[in-house]
Length: 94
Image (cartoon, rainbow, N blue to C red):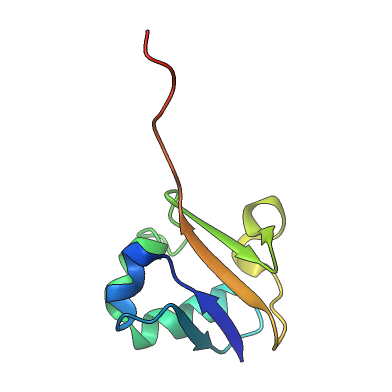
């Protein structure tokens, strides 16, 4: 089983857990397992088409899945998946 690390803002949706175990051979399968057990988290992670929400970043063993195979990224049984909300805004004041 893989470990999914949840950011503080999403922990309430997974019962307050910092880490949740999930089963699957790809990121898609891991997220399907996670959202099947914790339906409230689905809209935070996936868009209406089932793709990764643009406001969330997912890393497998510290590698950004968007730079590789996305949701089809292979996940090993001892992998760590990190979910992070994307940061926006900032910039210098004019």
